[in-house]
Image 1 (cartoon, rainbow, N blue to C red):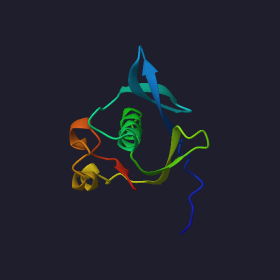
Image 2: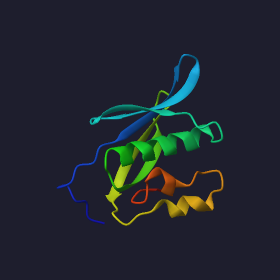
Image 3: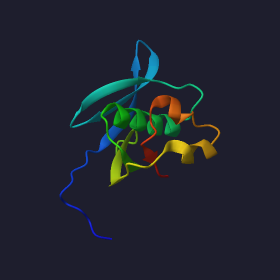
Image 4: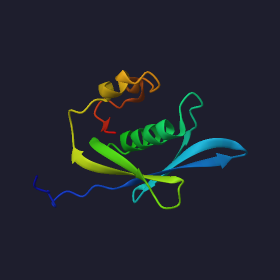
Length: 113
């Protein structure tokens, strides 16, 4: 596989944080930082994925990503592995615990496990 160095992708870091005692998720990259509501019906790992997807959609990025933990044990780094204009979140519909991403305007986004 040949790597295209003409394109630059930003990594997204997600981390659980708290505001007035309530959990929430924080996502940041070079483009900035945003906070998202904690989804109580999802696991911590699913909240990380959902937060990365929300952030990427908010930034207008259409990409396939993979994620992995950082040494602090709390932060997950999500890295783009390819531009994927036609990727959809339908693959996640196979996981009943994941929400309906079409309602999140994530039609051009995919996350690989």
